[in-house]
Amino acid sequence: MWSVHRIALLAFTFIVLGAGIAGAWYGSQRQEAERRLVFTVPNGSVARLAAGEQLDVLPPTIQLSLRGQDTLVIRNEDVQPIQVGPFKIAPGQQFEQRYYNPGTYDLMCTLHQSQRLRIVVVR
Image 1 (cartoon, rainbow, N blue to C red):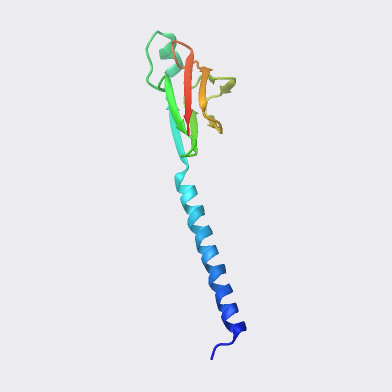
Image 2 (cartoon, one colour):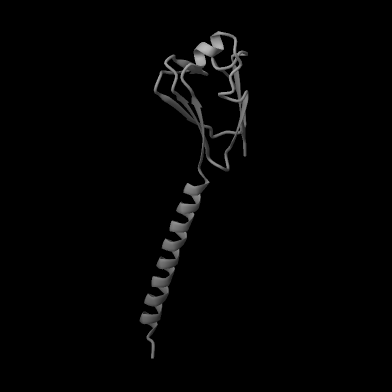
């Protein structure tokens, strides 16, 4: 026959195991949901832009999702620095930005003829 203490201990063990499994599952789901949008600026991009060429390095509008926990990454593989918003990205460096509020963000961007980059953050 099972004693009350043994039943309580068994129930407690199942609750702790269930909570641990649920926590591990939630953590793995959350990690999988994170998304990185990576744009790479190839060597020679700044010179081509200065020569009047249109570049397709960055789209004029980038949409990010709060639900997807999106992070914007811009890698500069050019020999010249570039600028996105107030951030100067030196050759060989990268810029990472995550947004926490929905909205539209208009930034100065030296990779566009218009000097503008629009970031749209949705829920």
